[in-house]
Image (cartoon, rainbow, N blue to C red):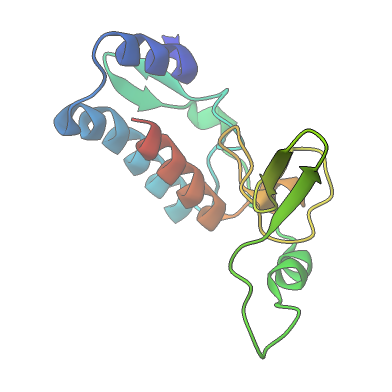
Length: 152
């Protein structure tokens, strides 16, 4: 049994994954998550600490399944656009140092765990912003599965 992070680093160091390899290790995990959703549960996909690899197959312990935690009101509040007249699709913060001739551009679409969530943001570490506001449903599992597949 190997942790997902160790498995990923070992495979990337050894020439990575073919499309067939990626699907062969990912599909068992996707099937396990789908079975959890059919049973009314969510997978332990708040990060990948509970995802393991055996024989090139990703999985998690069924005992780690939980019931969904919903915070629909907060999700709607965060997803609600400030204006219905236009949609802002990206935001940046630019800091300039004229004396040094430098500028620093930071995407406001990137967040950090532990910070207040005021808009949908990307968070590193195989989590969704919904996890940070106490919302974990099948859709958040699907998002994290997408992050895992993209890594492969």
